[in-house]
Image 1: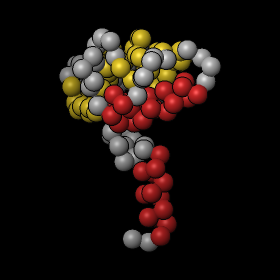
Image 2 (image 1 turned 90 degrees about the vertical axis):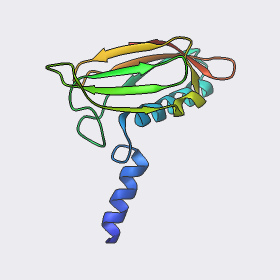
Image 3 (image 1 turned 45 degrees about the vertical axis):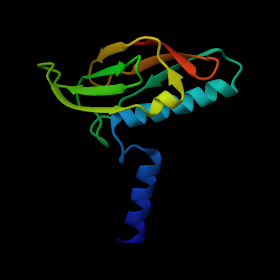
Image 4 (image 1 turned 180 degrees about the vertical axis):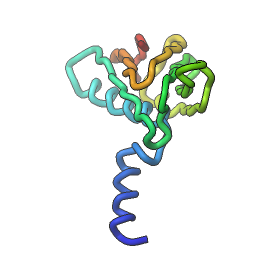
Length: 131
């Protein structure tokens, strides 16, 4: 591989847009938001997640997100017409930074932003709403 191609691949991976799935990108965004919340004087923050469509395993159409009590973060890509699942991604990486006292499952239209309300906790931030 030439040096320019290697540099482009490294940049894409560093930004986690081309070398990861949607659940992992969301988990990294939760990590960044909880770190910013911990450094701030605020007690709460709303994370706004814009799904990456057609880039690095993003959902091209509608999607469903589950943030659950046992620590899983799951994204299902959906066919906007039929509602059928066309793919899915999951991770538990975000569990290092947040706890979820309940399970949320939210459906979104193609390109629609996901909102996660986070609150400072004793050891970790808490998910207080997913919408």
